[in-house]
Length: 188
Length: 173
Ligand code: HEM
Image (cartoon, rainbow over all chains, first blue to last red; front, side):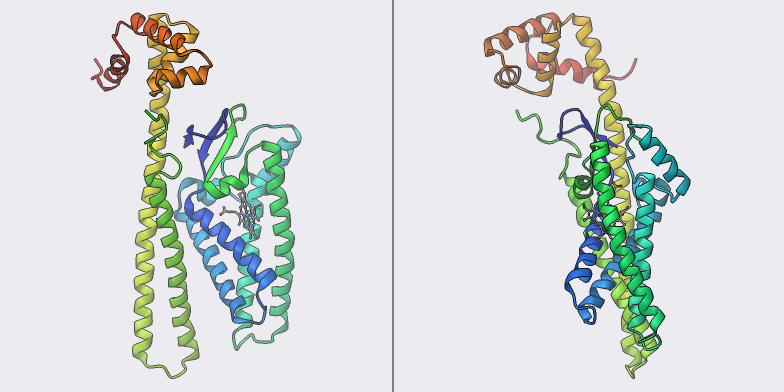
């Protein structure tokens, strides 16, 4: 798993995110940005971007089952107990680094995926004859959108915080697939 | 000799490029499959007087796309698994190689400075580069390499390297 070639001296490199994980991540992020800020919510482009985001999320979830070890549900199970333990470890000054998502990050990933599913499914419903103009569908769509914005802010904040805390350039890892971990930090 | 050229599995190496191309194909084909499936479902519900032949054709295309997607996913999965295996055995081999090198160096009684130089010789650096990296005169490095070859009982760089290759490739006794 680890790669020693290149990078900062004193850092081990671990190949963690395969290209499919990275493409789907940045594709989803781009789609969310487009639909939140640029496309006309009534327009077809908004709908089409929504379909693409849904497709990417579904593909990523499929990859959580058939993908390589690091990309699977099993590598970052949703566990509030583990998240709490992780917070305790952090406060206790634990220096270990998680190769996959840390347990808090894992909860955020599931939250983001669920929110995106709710958002795109209600979005599609709003375009169907059966649900056109139905109020609760629109309300759920709006609420999911608000929640997604809060979540994305927390997500990016959390990534930057953990990057600072562990010294592992996480954003770069989402770009080139490798986590560079300082030699004096154990990995989990 | 360029010591970084031709490393197995370096970033951007052939395996990584292949994996990236495959992943892009999986993503694009998944979106196409979704589009056709969505279209079929939509046509089934709307039923707006389209010829059944059209529906069959779309359904067939969707099926072919999904099948192709499955093939691509299996392919990508196998490639990634192989990359992981190669990396794992490379790590194991590196660890063992380091031990073998360490054993030889101790056996020959190299000084710490000679160890550093010998390691760089093994990595393929020439005297000028080693002098540059260590901030010493080329003459110093030349003298140190001569001492290393003397202690190892070889007459030069090539023989030194072949000592280690032999150790790696020999049948275990
Ligand atoms: C705008 C919408 C965004 C969404 C919906 C989103 C969603 C997600 C999701 C679902 C994951 C889990 C990834 C997986 O396992 O496949 C993730 C991970 C990640 N995201 Fe985002 N993301 C967004 C934006 C960003 C931005 C702007 C950045 C850069 C600062 C970023 C950096 C990361 C990183 C570094 C990870 C991996 C974290 C780790 O190492 O555990 N994301 N994101």
